[in-house]
Length: 339
Image 1 (cartoon, one colour):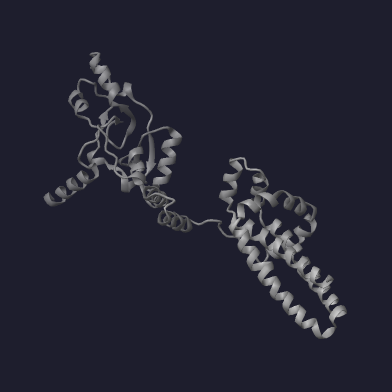
Image 2 (image 1 turned 90 degrees about the vertical axis):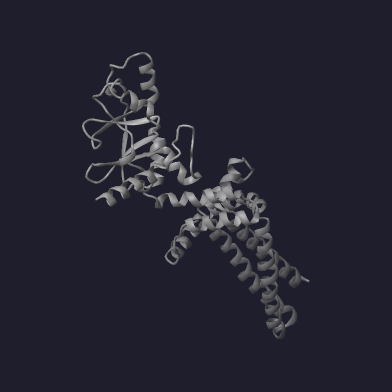
């Protein structure tokens, strides 16, 4: 009777620790953060565990090994005293089989399927026990750390695959999947690939008056127009077409373009699209001048140009129907043919 009770206790103990271990590994860090934001009971402790999971897992492994090793020894002693040495091998083999099935495989499956529920329940007491065992856990962690390799929790490729699987399973819409895929491509797109080239940009000389540029102002298709000193390599700022039209409506055609100048940012032709988005948001800007390594103006790039890499072509009421980058290529081809 005592032997049977001991075997049951060992299996239950092993099952509990195996199930907890599987549950903690099955809850992702991002999910733990979500639960914490939702204010779920125990989520704060679960998040703390996920941020540094090696120590709590070491604690679980310690107790699981104590149960299995000490339990096996105790069962061996009880089996010998009760049934004799002849039955020791049979009992040991049966115990090993029972632990594998009922103490490992089944509990881990249950733990994975009920990961959040189990994790939220055990997180607080597990952290408390881990704190008590800090010296032992720290020592074991130092030993095992030399044999473990740190890796990125979730890689870029894994996120792409997960978004694709999410779409196949119906939890993510196609547009959402495409957006996720495009986000990772931003770092591969250079400013020079999305800018409007210098040959087709509209720019005003700062020393000219509104009256001198009246026709150009009316014909301008963009709300923000670069201003230059002597050549387009000397961009000094930008002006807003709306401000120019208001001044002209007030018959202030004598005013110089320089009076309407606003600060403009410059970027390298080698800047990445993701950097552009961050820069535009930080500077609260919509347009930047693109320069090469020698300081020459290559063109302009807008917030819209960067956003189009995520959401596709954006055409509003102020846009020309002609793609300006395509127009620049046509002009270049014509110049080459005439040359």
